[in-house]
Amino acid sequence: MSAAVLSLLTKSTVRIGEVPVGSARPVLIAGPCAVEPDYVETAERLRLLGVDILRGCAFKPRTRPDSFQGMGAAGLELVAEARRRTGLPVVTEVVAEDEVAIVAAVADCLQIGSRNMQNFRLLVRTGESGLPVLLKRGFSATYDEWLAAAAYIQQTGNDRVILCERGIRTFEPRTRNTLDLSAVPALRELTDLPIIVDPSHAAGRASLVPPLCRAALAVGADGLMVEAHPRPRDSWCDAEQALSLEELAPLVAWMTTG
Ligand code: PEP
Ligand code: MN
Image 1 (cartoon, protein in one colour):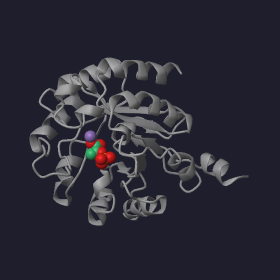
Image 2 (tube, protein in one colour; image 1 turned 180 degrees about the vertical axis):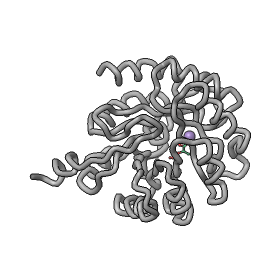
Image 3 (cartoon, protein in one colour; image 1 turned 90 degrees about the horizontal axis):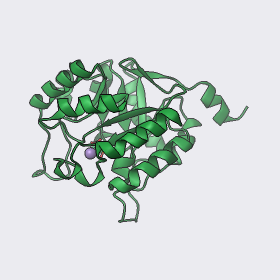
Image 4 (spheres, helix red, strand yellow; image 1 turned 135 degrees about the horizontal axis):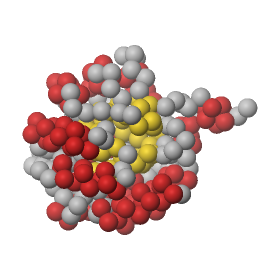
């Protein structure tokens, strides 16, 4: 039996709240880049659309120090409220070791962003929370470096790791990053961890997101993470790549009906 077939048979499922990631049905994680003051209302609209899992970061690792860094603790309160009101699980990012506990208190899954993929102490602390960890690929990380980062989490005894391809840095400037779809089938041969795809941070442009979503599922991704905002142009972070909720709706319909 080929390695690819074998790894499909041994593929593991990681639950975020009650939602299995890595089962037969691909999941949709969606929400704004950053938690903003209207996050709870946005979350309710996302639930009505049929999104499986919410995203939204209260702590943002930004390239520039003068960019919005996230609402912080006030944002976590909105995450907790959104979770209560919608009943949906939430993925949100941790950027610092000493913030893992407060984020873990409200989240169903901790996200390690691309910029922190090799922040080894943060990986260990995050693993020790016992929560599922969504590990984004560093934008210049090889598959082996990415899996080694996952091993830091797994070594804490936490095997609830979900890998997320979000584009890598190449010579092409017209997209924010280059979505490496090879990662999905290639990693299937190397690991039994679930693999999802984030086309938003790869493309950097909303118009490219729906076709890349379809491509990601065609190569076997276990789910998608998509940035969506009720008024994309007003988004406090990553405005160019956010889908409006009207643009997200056909994607949800396509995912549920095929
Ligand atoms: C994000 O998901 O909001 C984010 C910052 O993504 P990445 O770490 O992939 O850049
Ligand atoms: Mn973003």
